[in-house]
Length: 489
Ligand code: ADP
Image 1: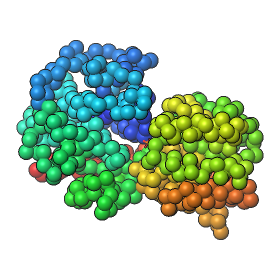
Image 2 (image 1 turned 120 degrees about the horizontal axis):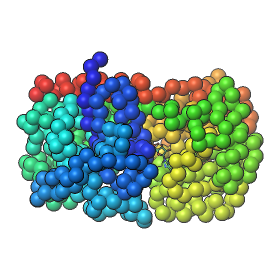
Image 3 (image 1 turned 90 degrees about the vertical axis):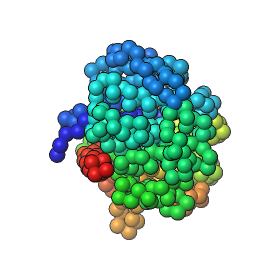
């Protein structure tokens, strides 16, 4: 298989800047391709967290002029020392506490300018550093304008003559739809402001333009790729994705088991594996203590780590959690941040049910590992879920997933079969709080009444392999197809 030169553009990459799965996936792909001898450069906005964080950075371009539709913007380019991770430094745009939102979880009003500028700057970086990639791989709406620049402004530019573009949609609910004035500011061709390309009910839609112009488009699980093409699906983009035909597909995310496996985890109290499962009990006790839960080895603990938003089904949890607490002997351990109203609800619960509900509001990677290791079950009742990573981590950590059968959750969890005692988790279908409560009840009764089955399900889950190897090979195939399309143009 040939080696590619790849420019990967993203608004997130772990460990530098991450709010969700996008950061994990981009980082895993970057490392995987680098390890396998591809020439890859990853480029991110120079956020405050990175430039003022624990990483050593060095200058690459002291000043870079980025022509935009209405004038030019100057910035500089840095690199995280010892890596191929590059940063576009523009302090007005990127030197802020959070990536996308203020502390009240309100989106920064200038996001279309911040990320529109970033898109154009990524290409300027390639030109000014003489990097002429085979593939530009862009991710989500924040980098969705890049394929349009390549096809229009740079169609005959020597730096991009051979470059094909690939767009990965990590979550189609976020499309970057903004007032149309942004279009000229970005310097895009006004002829492309039409409903087949960028226009979306009079607004400018970054992701829609990305879908139109990218040579290949994918999303992050086969089931989600089907769901977003259903009539009325894809938050309005279903017809455009359907039109892409063979140029649109679903590739399941993988897990980086160097970061997420209980035998390799430096954050947890005691490492464990299928052969030495005793360590899990130590981790459970440690987690219970850290989260303010009653240390009890026998009670099942249900974990949740997530953005606390509607998509993730937290409304369903809110509507039934007290019934569960009154009717079953269980504990909940919840880590997350998001919508203020839901955050407040869960913080109150922590006070109302001391020792039984542990809640930590915030983003805390270490605690995320501690909760995976210490939980017996892991709950993801998402209304929709492009892939989902935490259920994959949970499988490996022996925290049996309880999930709604949607998107990647459906693709990665095998429902428990009560007759045979097989499966890797517990699934429900209808997106309602009663269905969730019933399924938690089913998992809890299995834990207490059929412990041999529960253990078998846990072990079958720990034996699953969702490493990146297979997914990375599928991305390489996607690159090949994109290049073929480009060369047939
Ligand atoms: P999404 O990308 O929709 O947020 P995923 O399940 O794909 O959901 O990925 C979420 C990632 O972010 C996981 O790695 C998860 O552990 C992490 N994460 C989410 N919220 C938190 C939090 N509050 N603290 C630490 N890690 C978190």
